[in-house]
Amino acid sequence: MRRLRTITTVLLGLVAGLVIAEGLVRWFKPQPRVQIVRGYGLHLVGNVPVWEDTTDRYNRECAVQHPERTRVLFFGSSITFGSRLRADETFTTALEARLNRAQPTPGFCVMNFAQAGFSFEQKYAVARSEVARYEPALIMWEDWIEWMDYSMIGETAYGTSGYKIRPDGFIGMAGVPDALNRTLLLHSRFYEYLTLAAGEQIPRPPVDVEARAFAATRLPRVVQLAQDVHAKLVLYPAPPLDRPFSETVASPPDWHAILVDFGHAHGIPVYPLERELVDQDYLRVRQDPCCHYNAEGHRTLVPVMERIILQQLAPSPYVERQ
Image 1 (cartoon, helix red, strand yellow):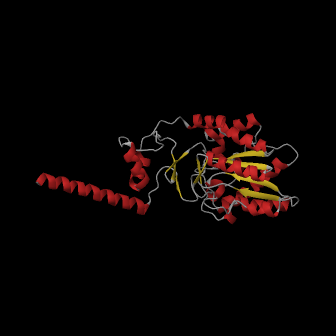
Image 2 (cartoon, helix red, strand yellow):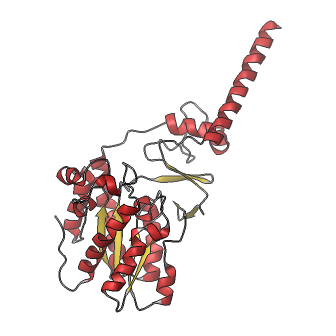
Image 3 (cartoon, helix red, strand yellow):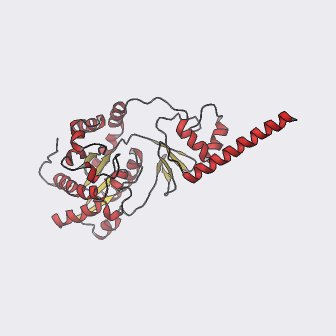
């Protein structure tokens, strides 16, 4: 009898501990090391999870009200979207006004379809639809480690690159049977957090290997997309903002060089932003050490993007900064 009471006490304590842990995770919402998307109109385009934080950057009304204007479409992640900024603080809003002052006839519509968290497949899924709809003269494509993939599990999109995907499409903890793993992952935030922190993983190749594979297999789809509507294409790799731009120019990320090589091979102009901003104080324009620009940073990007766009849409050959 004493042994039974001991076992019962241990089990009750374990259950209570799990309930408390579940409550703490739901209350404090600790950030896992991967992207998680819930809500925001999350849906599948084919088998690609896509979402919308807000549509106030799209600027569709410009194309409706001014069908004669030259259309420039931006696709990107939170960097181009303007994380934690209002739409009127992002560079694309001021860019349109500046371009229209420079060339009021026929004028420009600058449309920003970037969204926070977007990787390549999200950007491409949106671009396929919007490029066909608006037939832009110029596509501006932001690059930022965009070969990471998402998997839709239940009502949630998880960044699952580096995780072992089970035959049922779920990630999980080693030793947990599939049926139990599915139930826990769908209903327990604590188990979800444990899985993302210490779940089954697979070895990943070095970044430069991933980047070369990405440039060889995925990025050509964007080139073809632009060619299908006779649009020009510009790639603008974004730098990390943890050091001065001059240092990044001197020693760029390996994947920047890979994208520049891709551009040269395909006749696509590439403008690494560290080169365009080399004279700027990175501390003044950054929002965080990762890659996001503050409002001042977005204001700084306006003349940079204006110059690039006018170069690319001018009849004379472009001059790419090397």
